[in-house]
Amino acid sequence: MSGTAASAARAAHKASGSSPGRAGRRGAAGAAVSVRGALDGASAAIAAGGCPSPRLDAELLLAAALGCPRERLLLDPDGIVPAARARAFGEAVRRRAQKREPVAYILGRCHFRRLQLAIDSRALVPRPETELLVEVGLSLPSATSVLDVGTGSGAVALALKDERPDLQLAGSERSGEALALARANGRRLALAVSWLHADLLAGVPDRFTAVLANLPYVADGERGALAPEIARHEPARALFAGPDGLGAIRALLAALSERPRVRYAALEVGAGQAPAVAALMRRAGFPAVAAERDLAGIERVVVGRRPSR
Image (cartoon, rainbow, N blue to C red; front, side, top):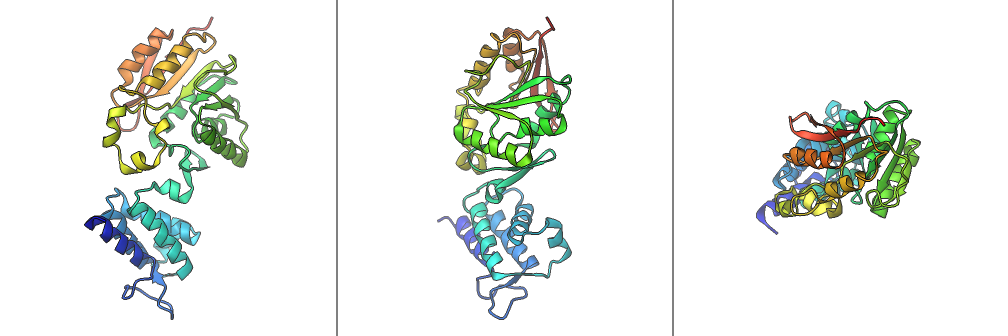
């Protein structure tokens, strides 16, 4: 174990309240630790592990271990963390600090738009920038039939249905495991989205007039540049798409070229990919193409339109 990892392990162990000499208030058995002490120790462990937001991560993990809102930690920093909860917290900190597991996977949930979704390693953790794909979809005409290709956890389809109940939503996914997660999210949220087990458009009924997609767009050679949270834990099938990262997008647009019923397509892309995807979209029969920028100023969603027949 490296020196950094060892330091992280020791700090995580202290955060669990089981290390002798731990600062902070303790119960009679010496196994309890204050909220402040637990957060300080966990933040140190997570920072030593190289995570970019150690204090926030520690607060989210401790709030989950205690079953309370994160705000309560700030209101009662001298409150005692019971021993059993401290042990669960220490294990969560270990997973974050040593394994660099995403916080969302440790918690088993994440927020996207107005929804709380169940999430695990069957699907990518929904990204803030993907909310732009939802915002683009919100502009669709009333009662549009929309297919979310590569739905993963169902985040885009479910968020659209939540905010635009008039839309007819379906989500397709080639991974049966990810599709099961999307179905479970749909049932729990009681949102009427239909789910299709399909690789892109293969076998998908030709009834949709709009297609949204957040497909894999990382080039195979960029694996080493990814954060450990992504490279170690998120499903590779949902990340990588050939030498230029456009393999999946290229295949989808080729399929859309044979689906004239689809009048509208919106695809999330990686930084710098928008011009190439725009050209592919025009060749697929979408003459009106535009790129929408995310909050970082990156051209993140390429939108193509076909004229009404």
